[in-house]
Amino acid sequence: MKGITSLAHVALKVRDMERSLAFYVGQLGFAEMFRLHRDGRLWIVYLRITDDQYLELFPDGEGERAPGRDATGVNHICLGVDDIGTVSAALEAKGVTLTVAPKLGADHNWQAWIEDPDGNRIELMQTMPKAMQLAAIRSLRIGDHAVPVYDV
Image 1: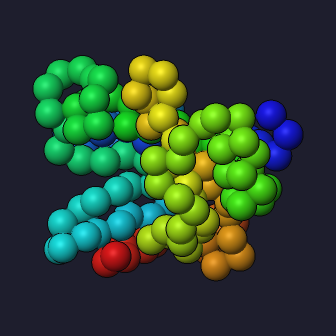
Image 2: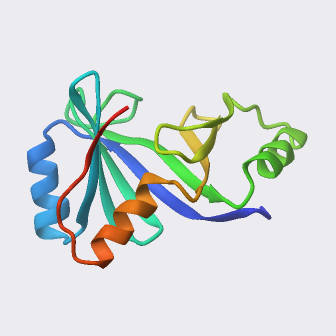
C-alpha cells in the first residue's frame, strides 16, 4: 500500500532476557541500542538490525512458545509509515479498524495499531526527529557503547 515505507521493527516477548541477548547480540551480532524501564523494571531492550530496523525484546514471556500478546514469541509487527494520519485514514477507508488511534508513543514516535484477521497486532509507526531510536543510532555511529536506560 502506498505510504508504508518499511518493516520498522519486530517485537518479541522472551522468556529469558539474558539467553535472548546472548543469542541476538552475542551470536547474531545485533548492537544493543538502549533499554526502557517502566515502574522500576526492565520493559524493553532495543537491538539494531539496521539504522531503521530494530528488534524489540520484552522480558518475562509466559510459556515456551507464542502466539499471544504475553507469550514468548512475536509480540507485534511494526510497519514504518511516512505519514501516520494519511496512512491511518487510508486504512480506515478500506474498512480496517484502528484498535488504537494515532498517538505519540513513549519513544517519541507517532503510532497507531491495527490487527490482522487472526488477531496479530500490527503497529504503524512514523519516526519523528526526537525518536529515542535516532538518538541511539547517533551514539552508536560515534562509537559510544554506553546503553541508555529510560524510565517511561
